[in-house]
Image 1 (cartoon, rainbow, N blue to C red):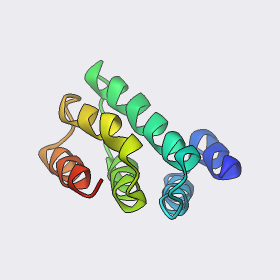
Image 2 (image 1 turned 180 degrees about the vertical axis):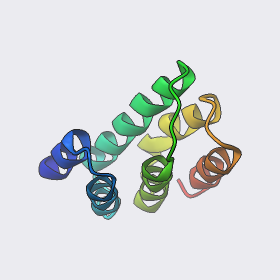
Image 3 (image 1 turned 90 degrees about the vertical axis):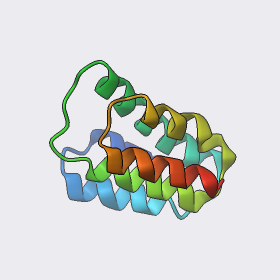
Image 4 (image 1 turned 30 degrees about the vertical axis):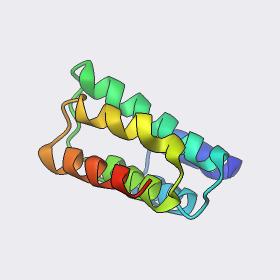
Length: 101
């Protein structure tokens, strides 16, 4: 899990990030969910601060991974998506993901 977190947070290649997110989503541990929620929270805060994202694939994949984990620790990060100016599709995904937790 630690290696996947390192890959997620240091890679500049979107495909590598997506692979790391997908792999982390297969774990239900608090450690894996913690890495994913930290990633989602960081980017949601940047979005709320006005940073524009051309591509929301990593954010959407993180939402899917958190939903797949079924770990309730993901709720605060998913809730933050709603108030961070993401696209309507991304917000809807986060709301649906919370139903799975």
